[in-house]
Image (cartoon, rainbow, N blue to C red; front, side, top):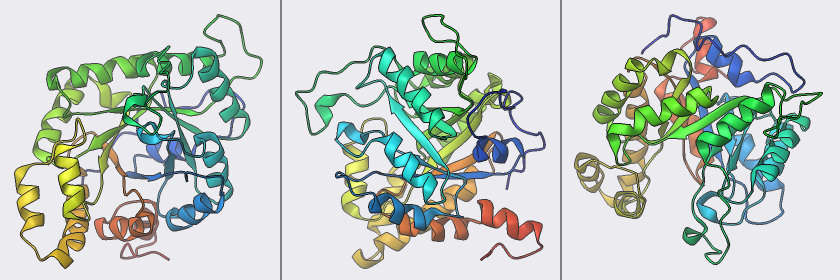
Length: 334
């Protein structure tokens, strides 16, 4: 497994401001291979859904993303979900998209997140409403993902986009997203460089199913010096059914599933597809961990949070594995 020798991206020291320090920031700065996961809010006002999912992840991940109306579908707000996740013992990463808010609303929510003790934010442009459950909704997109990263860094430096100074700036860790497989692929590393220049300190990628192509993208990322300033966290996830395989292969723009993955999953009995998909995910984690510059993985297992601990344990990564190694154990920590 690739073990970083540096202390992590040089600019990860938190500013002297008021929000609680990010544990994810500390994990990245330590040089340890980090693990994050996805925690999807419910489509109603039931807080128990967040608490239950957080219970599966607690102790196994360094932080969990609370999504912001993913797929342009109405869900419990990412800010509320983040507060609930934190209360349940899981450090949240609050996602914030440009789709539904102008720069006033975005800055307001970022300040609100800081005031509520949310230590990490993940900033992205967001899916267009036409793809969601309210296709007639008017999109905002006053800013894009690059501009929002810059706005967040400006806030953390103590200034609103208007230039007005803040008496109590936030101190969250700023994250972004990138898709190594989306066309035009030749520009994806340079696009990430723009986000890092704007203020992003960690990036979570789209699903990695083609490790060879991802490794080639990482070579470009390293050549641009991005890994010295930003922690690259590779997106992974289990394909648990042939229906999901078909959806990812044909119905989700920007996701690339190699033919050999399809052949492998179709080559086992129907009742073995889920187990094979989980094994494939474990193998992918172990392979991307060997790629220079990869600082962790982001496990996306929508509706399958209960399976995340098994994936992480089998892959031998995450905070529990690090603790077990430090104690001289096998990696199977309680």
